[in-house]
Image (tube, rainbow, N blue to C red; front, side):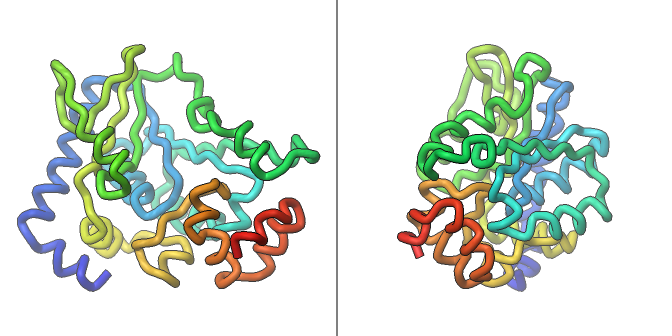
Length: 240
């Protein structure tokens, strides 16, 4: 965070911020009826704040699941954020666990693989904003680098059905995120405060989250939370 404060003064940081704002402006003109899909992770909370400054009434949706408020302190962060910036937030809960008590962890994951796509009625919207960045993975870098004829701004992707996705933070790195969080004093999930902004977060226990140490981190943050998850899915203890 201290590095981010220093980095915020550099011209390259200011150019990246301007690039993001230009992308949002282009998306507003192209698809004025859009929403933001947010997760309250480090990138997402920056996007939510930025969009709120531009359009306070923009609909924002957070996709939660049975385990979301067990694995991270989302309630605390959401309350802290919305008390200062009252975004037009809807929390959509896809509870595949309670509704399917006999299914395994893998089976509930499989049922929910399209939950994000089904969170909103696609036909009702012209597009949506996501807080994706190229540095997250090779796949993200390839997706966010895609160009198309008539593209009004590099942050905007066009789907085959004519819908649009805007990722204003696509070129941001950790220092860009740290600079923005520091400047606006944005609330953060506990896992970032404990282990740094390098951590990846998710609102559900996915395969990648478990295999890359997410469940093990839960044990360090609080054994009660892990026990609640393991009471329903004992197979998760294999990842501790």
